[in-house]
Image 1 (cartoon, rainbow, N blue to C red):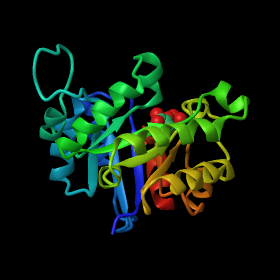
Image 2 (cartoon, rainbow, N blue to C red; image 1 turned 90 degrees about the vertical axis):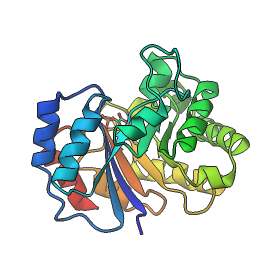
Image 3 (cartoon, rainbow, N blue to C red; image 1 turned 135 degrees about the vertical axis):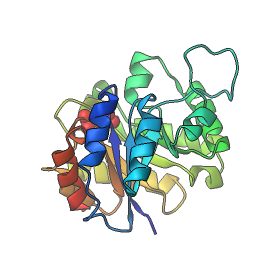
Image 4 (cartoon, rainbow, N blue to C red; image 1 turned 180 degrees about the vertical axis):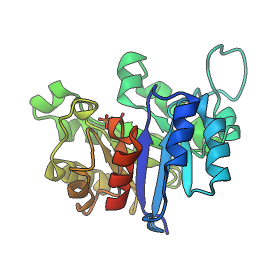
Length: 243
Ligand code: PEP
C-alpha cells in the first residue's frame, strides 16, 4: 500500500528535450512499493512525459501544477481538470504559495478548484503554510490550523481523504532555509489532530538530498514536495534512495 510520496515540482523549468532526458536517466531500482513518485511539470510537458514514462514502464505518475475549476467554456488561457486528466496527470497541485502570492489565488477560488479536481478524479495536492511575518510573530500553528479548519468546514472527511496535504511554509520555499524536522513534525502532528486519520501529509521547503532523511524520520511526515532539488536527476535520485 502506498503511504509515502515524493513529489517533484518543476515549476516553470525544462523544455521537452530536457524532460525526456530526465526520464531517460531515471532508475526505479531503489523504489520501495510503499512510495509514489509524482512529477509536476508545466502543462505542455504532460503528454510528452506520459508517453516517455509509459514507454520506459516507469512507476512514475504525473501532476499538473495548477488548473481552473470549470470543465470547459470561454476561459482563455485556462486549463480544465478534465484536460489535465486527459493529458496524463492523476494529481494536481492546488494552492501553491507562488500562485497564492503571484496570482492572487485565495481560498474561495482554491476551494472551487479542490471540488473540481475531485469531480475529475484528480488527487489534489493541497498546499498550505504560514508566511515569514506570521512565523516571526509566532503564529505558525494558528495560521496552519486556520487553513486546515477551512478545509474541514467545506469538505467531507471522505473528500479530504482523497487529498494529499502539503505543508509548505512560504519562507522556506526556494530560499535554501528549510524548517527544522522538529518544527515540521509539530505542525504535522497538529494537522493530524484535525484531519481524518491516516491522511498523507508531505513537507516542502528547500528539501535536498542532505536534509531529506531527517524529515522522513518524523512520524507524521509521509513524504516530501521538492522544488529546485528535483530538477537535477542525480539529486532527485539521491532523495529517492532515502525513501
Ligand atoms: C516548491 O516549489 O513547492 C518547493 C518546495 O520548492 P523548493 O524545494 O525549491 O523550496
